[in-house]
Length: 117
Picture 1 (cartoon, one colour):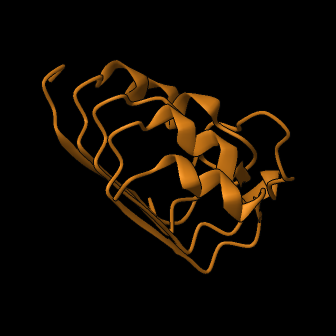
Picture 2: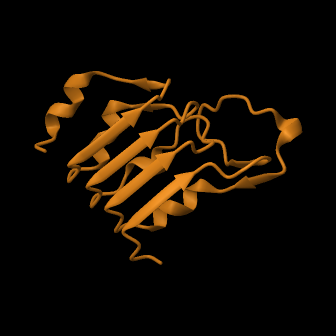
């Protein structure tokens, strides 16, 4: 799987969460049965499309923002994922960007000037 080019990370179902990132939000620990290590995707260095949709990610995950071949990034309805627009610099080939309904997006819109999409 090291040659994987497309990946979607989404809701896991009741009782499942991904491992906490840096600066996590609090989980309702009484309702968690399984914790999955999200850091494993850093091994997929050839990713071109990365899609997060309703993924139960909490906090910051710098490892998710370093894919030099990534061309499309979609982060939708990930309410507890914290990220800054400056993190997009880890995607020098980025052409398509979709942020929808994300409460913890920060940063200066001028950070997007680095992209020539």
